[in-house]
Image (cartoon, rainbow over all chains, first blue to last red):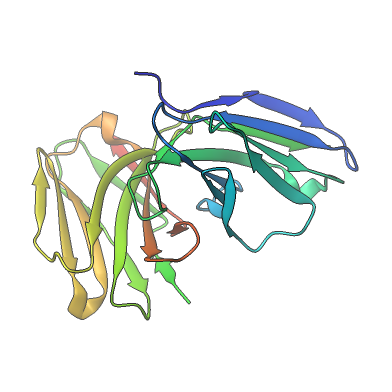
Length: 113
Length: 114
């Protein structure tokens, strides 16, 4: 069975630009969560979507937004990029709530210059 | 607020030694879940274990074992007879029932030298 997939693998943007990251969950999973992992730190929760509705939001500015599609795939959008947005963005899927076992994708490495 | 502390930033041992990674958590909830994940250099987080707050039984899976002690708010992870392939960053994480997302510690970088 295919695991969680994310695209693109790597991305380089300049300050002020906008970026869209994509995630496809494991088949049958209806929940997708997004995390930001800055170098040397643990992942930080950004959003959770379940059945296409936002279920949770971490402490991130409004420049960060996300959505979930009818096929349960998800997009994370970041506007007005800052240097500090450079990080590994991880997507995780699960059957339901975030206290269920979550399966992570390989991540998208975003570099903001 | 929930918090996870992994005080060991980096541990280096020689292959075949036993090694324990510490995890201390803080939560006000009585129902919560604890996790360990492994992050190899490729970057993908690999799920190792989930424990709920009502199950204090220790768990063993091959060379891996976990010791959950509510009295000290700790959920430590031991690798017995370590191998080079165990080299990775290990994260402990906490989720409260009804809370948003997982709260991760800063991770412990484990280096197993041949």
